[in-house]
Image (cartoon, rainbow, N blue to C red; front, side, top):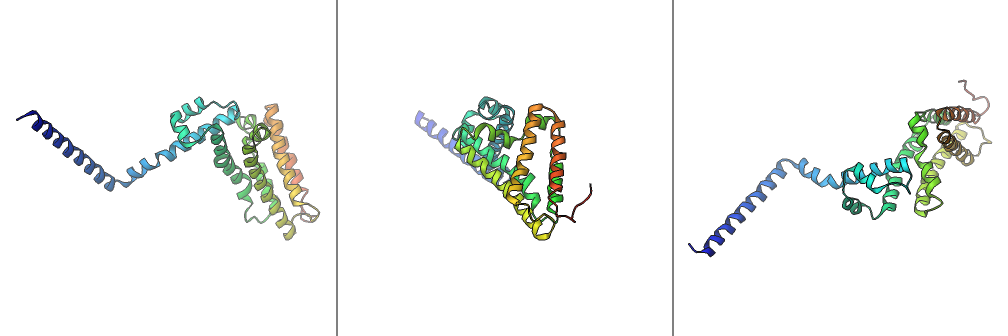
Length: 241
């Protein structure tokens, strides 16, 4: 047997082995579609890990001081994976605003106002539900933190954060209008102004508490905001407590 015959034989064996390997893989994928779906979802999970790690780092250090190396280490991914999903650090920051901060604010301040019977009771319950845990108070509100830091510097951040504040204000104003129609909110209350004042008080007391590094400040703020909300009730519709 000459050398060429041996090479042809080896190539034939390798081809048969490769075909058998591919066939076995196809059969395994058919038998276990979840495994194939998991492989397809890996990029989605990588992107989510990056977002969560970036959110934590931005909350701790601010956007400008946030370290990409810290984010990558926390997410357990490479720099190549980061730039596969996000063009640059700014794009990652925008995604944190749109996909983490915005849903969080909507879940806390917008969705609970849908289909409520008593707007004032609902708003009071939401304010009383504000976290007074030291770690949350000392870190401040992520929405307000970014607004204070980045709105003067970057139009992309400013517009995205403005959209969140607008949704919060409009949801609050809408429920106050409904309360006026139902007779539970005073007629002389201007809903949009009152909604803006509520946001200013929530974020203002949050900033004061963060600066003081003292949960007692936010606890006092909650008490004062609740008292103000009760004052919005129509006379004759006041509740005790």
